[in-house]
Length: 186
Image (cartoon, rainbow, N blue to C red; front, top):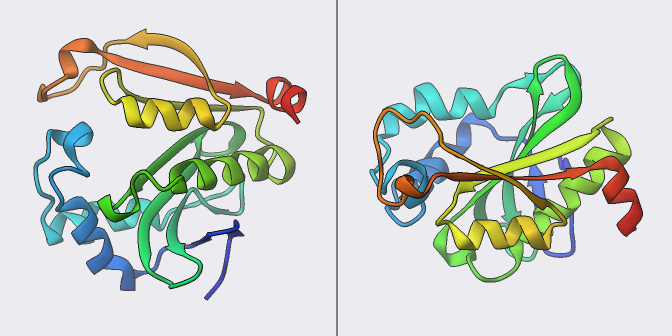
């Protein structure tokens, strides 16, 4: 198994097609998907044809992927995934931070731990200049992870979503961390 990044409790590794069952279980949980699509389950076919190909994509500017499977280091248990993906295919300057963890991993600090490690790797090894992250304004848990990971509130905005979900009427929020702000806190 190739390891992209390790923390005290996590291993982040590239996805493989063997992760289909893990991804289906993750995206089939209504609570996990609550702020993504209103809690609708994701079919296995969708995971195979849409989700997994996106997670397997290599970004030329990184020479690696933008999404990684997260496993608990002590047990090897699949926890979910993390994203540090360039917004422009050929430029590492601006990346999006994201995470999706199964419910058993919630409230244990894994999202913050993985996010901090990816942010550090982005700024030290990958040529990142700005990290951005967004979520629904009502997703207080995800907003808290962004704040604990060093990102600052940038703006409220209204996304153009085809189907409204509960809470979307409050809009979305964007957070950011620039290289200069990251360097100041080190």
